[in-house]
Amino acid sequence: MKRRGPDIVFDVFNTVICLAAVAAVLYPFLYIVSVSLSDSVWISRNAVTFYPLGINLEAFKRILAMEKIRQSFLNSVFYTVFGTVLNLALTTMLAFPLSRKRLFGRKFFVGMIVIPLFFSGGIIPTYMVVHYLGIKNTLWSIVLPWAILSYYLILVKTFFEGIPEEILESASIDGSNDLRTYLNIVLPLSAAIIATVGLFYAVDNWNNFSNALFYLYDQRKYPLSLVLKEMLVTMEGAQNTISTNEKLVVQEAIQSAVIVVSVLPLMVIYPFVHKYFRRGITLGALKG
Amino acid sequence: MGKIIAHIRKDRYLLLLMIPGIAYYAVFRYLPMFGVAIAFEDFSYRKGVFGSTFVGLKHFLSFVTGPNFLPLLGNTAVVGVLNILITLPVSILFAIMLSELWNKKFGGFVQAISLMPYFISTVVIVGITFMLISPDTGIVNKIVKSVTGNPIIFMAEPGWFRPLYVITEIWQKNGWQAVVFTAAIVGIDPNLYEASAIDGAGRLRNILHVTLPSIFPVIAVMLVLRTGSIMSLSFEKALLLQNPLTYSTSDIIDTYTYRRGLLDGSVSFATAVELFKGVLSLLLVDATNSITRRLTGRGIW
Image (cartoon, rainbow over all chains, first blue to last red; front, side, top):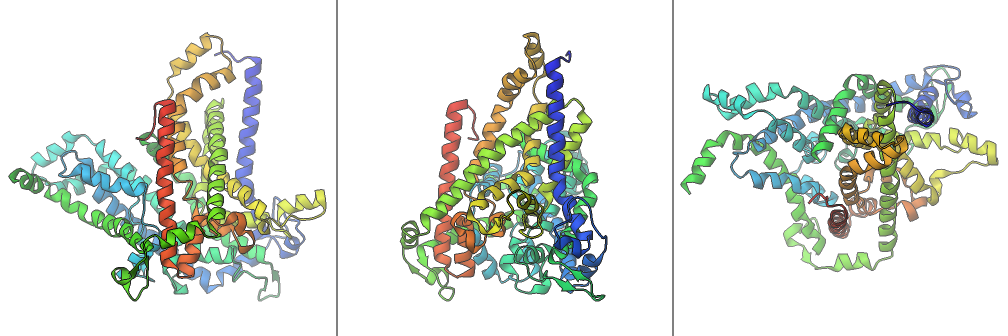
């Protein structure tokens, strides 16, 4: 296609807009990092814009000294790892049988997992269930309520459906039963989808604070996301403080430092795993 | 009968594998659905679900005739509709622009960056927003102050809740939404573009007459899905952005339910409100689906 005058104008315009979009998305993060590394004197004068002024690590020293931050970070790591493993186990175990057309009662079971996409019991009834199960304020109240997300389940099921029936049949001819086939053949073949869905679950687990908000009353069990909520939104624990060497550390510095700490794990792995995310969204979209 | 048993036996391992998953759905998704029974009672923890007095539609009526009904419904609807009206076209436009970029690597880069905020927790998004709009130290007010001399206290003014909600939604979700449309655009038959070029169409014409119509089914499906979730606006985002000063615009059905139900303890009332919302939501999805299907021949069902 020949590139004509109007085309070039269009291209320039397009490129400028896209660059502006990139800047708009990135600037808030840049600002936060700058504030977290700045001397509080400059922050209170509202002078920090694109880069840190009077670089110091006081804010970070201050928050790392907080028991609350260290404990909740570890809690979040634990909830995320444990939760994601549980998510993947339950999801794949349910998705595989559903992907086999010969399954007894298949239509019924598929319907059963689709309905919750549109209708759910609600916050209070779910709370009741958790309450009557006696698992409030425990690990289970964090990982069980959303142990399987129908959306991700369907993604995995679709993937499994793509595995040629011949492979599974030849396995059963060789004497393998469904369980063995699932463990030895299906799972290894599904590394890609497990990685993708696992990442989605992991991000959800790391960020979620609703379960903790509803069901936990022991502060020492709080995940980082809930501690963040308190510090950023209700401003607890983030007031101006004087650190040990008598440098003033402003509330904003503390808050930005906490944000940086909580976002860092994701930022670090993002470039490596971003293609899995994109693949997952595309898969979901095409299925939809 | 014998055939059924034989079928079950043949699939016994598959069925066994399914047990944990089915148990999960039964306990945490379907059991709560029955829990909506407490919306029809004056529930008390002591008496339990079966012992509490049945009161029929009392809670529904008191909600619908109460002072909060119209404002809550209004807020939820306005924010929901505004959200879709603005974010959907923005992501469509964005997806189109991305796919029109001359340098594909640059396009991939832009898309990767735009996708990033989706994975940041809402708490962080709101936290960053608060810092940016802070009256004393925020950069937004720095600019405002240099123009008008006075800062705008965004968080205290009801009028700013909706813009803040929508802008943060765009920041957070635009990249994700755009990937869906990009995937659809990539799937368009190149022959359509060649045919259009032969007819002498320029870039803009191409976009209007080839790209947009081709992805229309995807847009329709997205619209229906998003409309269904109008009622279930991000509870977390609204909860974080709101405070008692801005309830007149920021209180939505879900946050009200949380406050009255879990914090105040009026569980029956709150459940009634939520059930009401759920039914309304279903009706909305069905209506949107029917309309879309009638207009375009495509819908979800």
